[in-house]
Length: 469
Ligand SMILES: Nc1ncnc2c1ncn2[C@@H]1O[C@H](COP(=O)(O)OP(=O)(O)O)[C@@H](O)[C@H]1O
Ligand SMILES: [Mg+2]
Image (cartoon, rainbow, N blue to C red; front, side, top):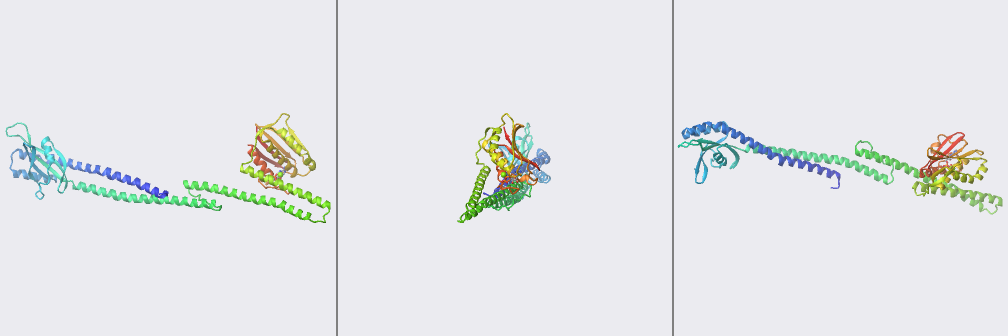
């Protein structure tokens, strides 16, 4: 019962069964009584139509044999059994007794003819049914009158009863009942089968999806969901397929990230090992030793920075880096960061121009993190440009936001490289970078509801950070 297939098949069968039972128990009795009424009415009509001669004959005191013959004629005309009953009114009340019956072959005392008493009592044609020895019988009784010898009011002297077996009605209804049962049974079987097959098809597709989902969960990203059909399951399949594609892209990115990160870490570690081995040489003169130590320090610095960057990026991507947004004067922050770069600018033989408004340029952001972004951008403007390239740092209000930009007049970023510079580990030239700077800056900007964008043409490259005010 846990399977949708069985539940659907059962539900369909139950509904159909209820419908069949409704027809069988609700409609066939109505049909039977309608057919019976029809028969009774036509009998009553016959009783009225064919009893005239009998009435006339009894009224004129004709011979019993004449009367009996007239009864037989009426029976032939109406194609019914006709019974003539006499009426007596004794101390027990009104009673009828048999006078003549048109069918001699059957036991003429098999029926009580209650309708005859009714007709005698009311003086009107009465109709009803009665159970005889060979099944139910429909009866219509017609009262016959006579005027008593002393004169006065007409009284019912006898009753003529027209009867016909109800067997054919019953047989008809039986046939219809049987047909309903047969047709219902076939319909029941077909509908259960149809429901079962349709549901099974659906459940098979669901099962296939489940298997694909299990494979994907187990790490097999080559498994594909069906996306062919247009129905609900097809739509689900397409949604799952899209999800799977994205998962697979994420998985690729993760693998790439780990591979690149370990490669980036391994290079300085190997070089450290190499220098350490060289330093173990006891015949090393002081000057060379000093140079090796300097290179060792450089590699250690690089490793340290790489480790910090990796940690920052992973925290940013996991959403666990805490930011403390506050009202910040971007101009002041820019001045402080610019001051940090005095030695680097001197080494690069460049000039950094600050273009700041005299009044404060305020934005809502984490000042530490905005300073980090500025450092990344100024560092790039120095490390990816030839010596002597000037840099401009500007901060302005624009369209209700603060725009902080770092522009340099270096050779620019290639058009093909531009869309990729924010990817982790992407470096387009041989400058000694890990390629994490812009990725971190971009994530940081987004986390502060800001946006970092780049524009570059040969001779002019601008990185702009927009922040909410
Ligand atoms: N001001 C710039 N001028 C030219 N190229 C740049 C500039 N800033 C960034 N790039 C390019 O974008 C790449 C990615 O920068 P970044 O993420 O900071 O990595 P890294 O500086 O470690 O190479 C750089 O390798 C460089 O090719
Ligand atoms: Mg950089």
